[in-house]
Amino acid sequence: MDAVDVVIVGAGHAGLWLGSGLGRAGLAVRIVDPDPPDALDDASDGRTLALLGGSRRVAEGMGLWPALAPIAQPVTRVEVRDAASGSSVLYTPAELGVGTFAWGVENRPLRSALARDFLAVAASGAWVQGRVSGLRRSTDAISIGLDDGRSLVAALAIGADGRSSRLRDLLRIPLERHGYGQAAIALVVAHERPHGDTVRERLRPSGPLALLPLAGRRCGVTWVEAEADARRLARLPANELLAILDRETGGVLGGLVLASPVAVWPLGAQHARRYVAPRVALVGDAAHGVHPIHAQGFNMGVADIGVLADLLAGARAQGRDPGDPGLLLAYERARWWDNERRLRLTDGLNRLFSNDIAPARALRGAMLRALNSIPPLKALAVRQGMRAG
Picture 1 (cartoon, rainbow, N blue to C red):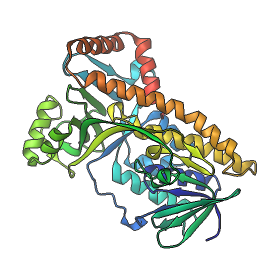
Picture 2: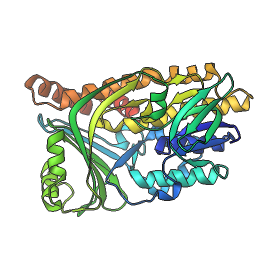
Picture 3: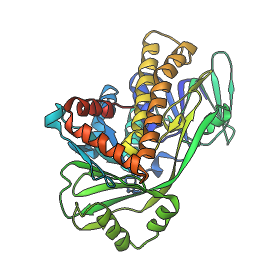
Picture 4: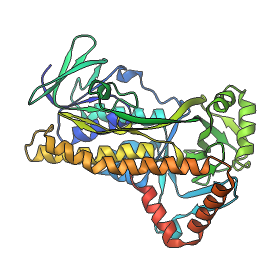
């Protein structure tokens, strides 16, 4: 195949988002993925994501927001409550001088919207179906071998192929990881009462439970429990599962109806020791993975994309090599430590709130009361939380 500027391995959210942005910047891009684009659809799989305010700004800067806005539900209030201590904090736009905190989206419709946008922006044949089998590098190019014998040649390869990244493994980039012994139950519910554009996060000794507003009277549920308990709950008949959910959330949504399959996935944290190698960069889940508490993980990946896309667009405007080592090092310096801090933050928050030890209960109660009663502290928390990673 002819050489291109960038080959992106993985057609998940990160790969498609980055591919669209680079295509709009004038770079020649190929995405390689085992699935063909016509395999994608908008059917719910139970998983949902919160796009924070910083992620919207990245989308707008890359020309992507018009493709995402129709499937994005604004979030204008956030309620966080610690179940054990009873303390809570409420964030509202009026007191903090912001409009919308975040947007609720469903996993599969988001990926489908990103795929449609990429296919509209990219050249014919830009989506290559196949599995990566190997790579070879020279001084001025990288060749990505596929399992059917084809090769993709580019100035730069980007690993956007998730937590089990094949490209990262081929490069032997070390990975630090640990598990939590927890799993997340994900589902979408239709409900009797309006959600009020409000995220409701319940911090419980067994793990957080969050309700994310979606279009209409629907919410996405991310419900964390010990792994064995999560799998047991997911096997219950729908009416029994929803009765427990109603009890755990204090009946805030009224009558509930299951509106999606019920998904379960084990939770863990991981971080690649480095994000770059000669002519290769990692983004999103290929580079890092965090606990879902406070909706940081996906937005950290969007921040990766925004930084790398800006660097590559600048390189193109200056006639520079997209795989220039200085450019890749600038990307790693901009993102690794920020992501490491957020990984430590989410890890610490989960360990603080996912237990019922008396000292921890007292500490988190004091933290939430302070946030709720000290306006500058609350404003700082919102500014940090709305960043795209």
